[in-house]
Length: 158
Image (cartoon, rainbow, N blue to C red; front, side, top):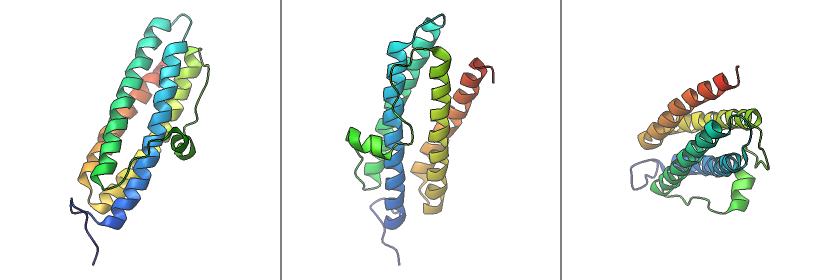
C-alpha cells in the first residue's frame, strides 16, 4: 500500500514531480533573467515593440516562478533557490549581451520549446499521479505558450 501525503497523493510519485518541478523552476529562473537582459539591451528599429514584449515575458515568468515554487511546497518538497542550482538544473542556457531583436526572439522561441517539452513531461506524470493541481497548472502554461510561440514565430516570418 502506498503512503499518501497531506493532499492525498502518493509520496513516491509526488517526489518525482517535485524533482521535475524544480527543474522547471530552474529553467524559468534562467528564462526570466534572459528576458530581463533582452529587455535592457535591445536596440534597433523594433526597440519600442520588443522592449515591451520582453517586459511582458519576464513579468509572466516571475509569476510562474512563484506558482511553481508554491506547487513544490504543496507537494511537500523544497523549491531550489540558489542560482548555482538553477544553472546546474536548467536546459535553458544563460545568455549575455544580446541586443539584436531577431536573435533575441529566436532565443525566446527556443526557450519556450524547452519549457513546453518539460511541462508536457510533468503533465504526463501529474496525470499518472492523479495530481490535478499540477496538471491544471501545466495545461494552462502550455496553452498560453503555444500561442506565444506562434506569435513570436510570425514575427520571425517562419
